[in-house]
Amino acid sequence: MKLIRFFPYSLKAKIILSVGSLITILMFGISLYITFHWQKLILHHQLQNTQELTKAFSIPILDAMIYLENDNENYEPQLRAQIQDFSKTVEHISYIMVTNDENQVIVHNDITQYNQIVTDTIAKLQNKNNSMISMIYKHPKFDWIIEVAQPLKIAGKRWGNLRIAIDAEPIRKEIRMLFIWMHIFTLIVIIITLSVIYYLIGKMTNSLHDLVSNIDKIDLDSDEFQDKEIKNDEIGYLTHHFKALELRLSQSHMQLLDSQSQVFRAEKLASIGRLAAGVAHEINNPLNGIRNCLYSIEQEPKNKKLRNEYINLINEGVGHIESVVKKLLGFSRHSKPNIIPVNLNTLIETVLHLLSYQMEKKGVSIHKKLKHDLPLITADHDLIQEVVMNLLLNSYDAISDEGNIIIQTGIVDEKSIYFTVEDDGEGIPEEQQQDIFDPFYTTKDPGEGTGLGLSVSLGIIDAHNGKFEVESEPGTKTVFTITLPIERNYEYTID
Image (cartoon, rainbow, N blue to C red; front, side, top):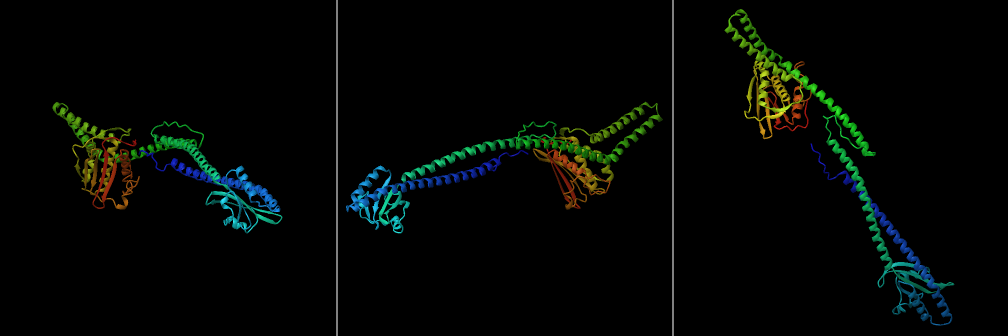
């Protein structure tokens, strides 16, 4: 049977899929963790910078407010000038404003915001505590900003609040690019990792493929073994043990063939023993005729005409004996497999001739339905002859005196033929039909059978890629049907 090498769920695919999925999940998980961690660090760093910037700028603002208040001057123009100068020196400032304790804008870099009351979240939080407040949020006008509110107080007196907002969009772009590049790097690492895994798994599966190919090439009938390169890894370890297994299988196969040959030989000798009476009768009759001819010649040694006539009869008797002995030797000899064109009808006629004396003695009627134009088959003549002999003897034992045996041949299709052996014996009980092909299984009395006939016949038919079927109706009939291919296409040969 040819091994199908396409596996929709192959070991290679499973490993790549499972390991690839695991690596992908882990790498993207690590990538997201690093990205969010870096994002947190960047935002924290930017927030600290904004806080330090706000603290540093709050000092000159507070000094100016104290100085101008002591001089009873309006400090709004001075603060506005400081804010404008500071905005020019620091990048990405969205706005700077100073509010009083009532959250009213005193100074703003946008003149339109003067005297406005601020009511946002930071303003509400400033009313509850006097500490620095920092927030990152989306402003309705400036989009995302980082804002820090620093209380302006000294010696227990509070002068108001300084609020500085920094545009967070550049930071967001930086974080976005960080996210993109991190994922690109992750994809590159995943692709490289999976490529390496694919290459390594490919080498492993190729080694397994080579091992399977060597398994397919095993020929147990040959003493030669495939040379296999043994690598210094787990696959090499497996290959080493496979070579040892191959050797053990070959040895076991040879032992099995030897045992099988002995079983076939034993069954054939048992069949010959059962033919002994018929063969003795076939030889005894012409021997008696030869003896009578010799006696007559002795009585009239000078009768040349009678002598020549008896000599011809003696030659004819000797020829008949020679023919019987040749048929018996041909059936009993132990020969190597010989696959030749076989005429199944002729083979059946030969076996029937060997069994004719026994059949006649028991009164068995043989009904032949042999198809005349039956094609030749390529088979082992002696083994097929043994199958026919075994089936006929099996039917002979199953029927009573004056029973009937029908042997028929025919064509199944253009590739195979069949023959059947049917008897009207007692049949085979249904519960025993599954056991009849077991070696040494028999329902006969001790000494009347080996129990190997059907088992051996099944082995022979299997070796010829044929089919062996049995149909039995207890008390009515039993039919054995053998189907054989016309052309030789054997998986193995039985010796």
